[in-house]
Image (tube, rainbow, N blue to C red):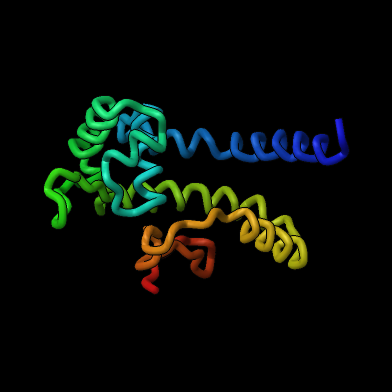
Length: 167
């Protein structure tokens, strides 16, 4: 095993432990919405990509079209996503996250930010800059026009509270 492999393995273990610290708070919010793991995967996919054709969901997540349709129907019934016809091709169904879905994300973000704030408050200013730079380097490229956060993003307000801002 190379030094790089050892570092990656060690970082993975540390990351899992850090995630586990806030897991009880995060899962309590998710339980209120009664979501399965598959539904969470689909919801996260749509959230990350913005308006998405249902066919892309199935392809990207490796699920059959009829299963993708069933999962999205349950998310629609829970008010977390909206389904509409594409104005250019009525055969295509487009999926978007609703205000209720964004409220779930805001709630989870608040929990994650509060717990994260507890952890990162222990870091020096230099360590915080390094951590920020690492997160920027790890941020995946989102195709143009597919970022759900171009109109609104979460930021940490003074005192650690999360607030929605418009850009």
